[in-house]
Amino acid sequence: MRDEARALDAADPLARFRERFVLPAGVIYLDGNSLGALPKATPGRLEQVVRDEWGDGLIRSWNPRESGGAGWIDLPRMIGAKIAPLIGAAPHEVIVCDSTSVNLFKLIAAALSMRPGRKAVLSEPGNFPTDLYMIDGLARHGLAERRLAPRERLADALDADVALLLLTHTHYKTGAVLDMAALTAAAHEAGALVLWDLSHSAGAMPLDCAGCGVDLAVGCGYKYLNGGPGSPAYAFVAERHQAAIEQPLTGWFGHAAPFAFADDYAPAPGIDRLLCGTPPVLGLAALEVGVELIAEMGVDRLYAKSRKLSEFLRKCLAARGAALELASPSDVAQRGSQLSFRHEGAYAISQALIARGVIGDFRDPDILRLGFAPAYLSFADIAEVARHLAEVLAGGEWRRAAFTERALVT
Ligand SMILES: *Cc1c(COP(=O)(O)O)cnc(C)c1O
Image (cartoon, rainbow, N blue to C red):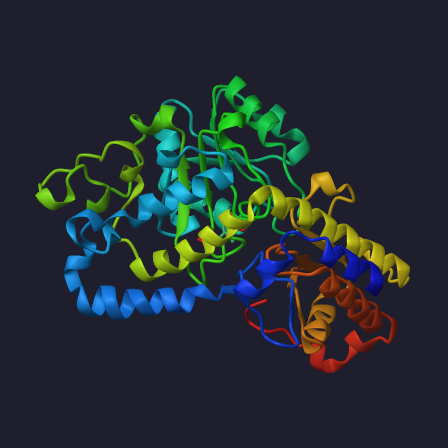
């Protein structure tokens, strides 16, 4: 397996990008789907923003570059335009702002107001919690009604009460991918809009919001886009909806003329109306570095590599006779850039792996989740992961008391 790994690494067109990331010695990082690794260029960029743009430029830095500023005011739109091709959108259809949770709130509410007379927001049980909680929050204010149906029955649950179908493209626990084109079409056929959460997909696989006719989408900046902890998120609104969309967090940055300081709100034309308050410049600067790096590698190449990485792990585990129940789809075309395994000792196994320098994670109640950020993982890493995992299982190492005690953040 080591020879095969060496050959695969030698043939990998993305191998050279590994050195563009900070990766601690002795660590194999399988959690890039939760917090992406640090690009080597990020600290320098942040230093420049802090010392030069903030320190020297002070408030002048807000102005566009054309007028001698550092262009802070343009960052949400400019970085949105760089994310756009990664998700199959046009540059003016994506903006970077707030967190994924807040963007969900804004877009769910906006979708409800675009479908008067309909109140149901349909999703699936087991969707990422924040997606469901944001529907709940709107329901508690009497604005929405939460409806859940298992993925096989979503199409049947789409009736004339449904204003919005809200789904996550790649499931955070299992990595199973939903059919974006088919479900979007089903929602439209029922007269509903669709909102896709792309958090676990964007940056790891090509997406086609335009081709699938997607209305709305959101996603994270700190996972495969490597924007750093708490990085701002992005929101997509298809051009055809931009003139009509009304989101409820009508802060001054979404105003048509924020610096006119008028008493009454008037939404900005286009995607800018998704903005609420002052953009987080440091977070935006870090995200830009991560997004540029992913764009340079190319999502097609990243996806091709991600598929090879996960299949190679399965092959290595099988060769070592490691028996683990796969919780992800076994068909590589049906899953995102991760493999999840079901095991009663999943938490302890993840801890035993961390003690060996293999950082994956655990998802309640019994899922061991291994993410494959194709930007910086090698096939040699994968061969090592298989060895560690097989040893942890075979020797019963995971049963040690030290590995069974739960930490607060898993
Ligand atoms: C990570 C993730 C989020 C995170 O939302 P935050 O507001 O950034 O905490 C939302 N949705 C999905 C599907 C995620 O995977």
